Structures are given as C-alpha cells and as structure tokens.
Image 1 (cartoon, rainbow, N blue to C red):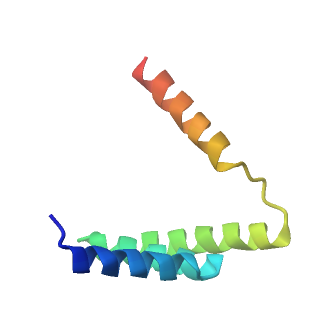
Image 2: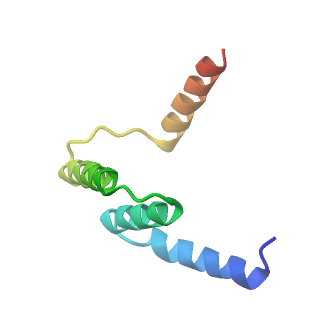
Length: 85
C-alpha cells in the first residue's frame, strides 16, 4: 500500500504531466513505457516514436480523424464483448 506522501507525489507528478503539450506527454509516455521494458528493442522504440510523432502531426494539422472518449470506450467494450463470445 502506498503511503500518503508518495500518493500526493504521484498525483502531483500526474497533474504536472497532464498540463504538458501533447507531444511532450507522448514523449513522456514513451520514456515511462521504456522503463517498464526489461529488454530494450531500439527498432521497436524507433517505430513507436515515429508512429506517435506521425499521429501528433496529423492531429496538429487537422487531418486525423478522432472520436470522443465515450465513443472509444463504447468501441472497446464492443470489441471485448465480441471477443468473449
């Protein structure tokens, strides 16, 4: 169980991270994910970084198609339901 000072620290870090621009949040996500990966794969890292960069550029250019959080959750639930049979 986390003690309260640690929890506040995590919450503070999360709040600060969420205030970053999208490209910086994406870079942070990549770094955090890398820290969880015990086997480092430079090719996979480069591919993910390129994919994230491409998606951010599409969003910034207004050429990406987007959906709302509610739509994404509904789609995920439908896929899980179909997968479960």
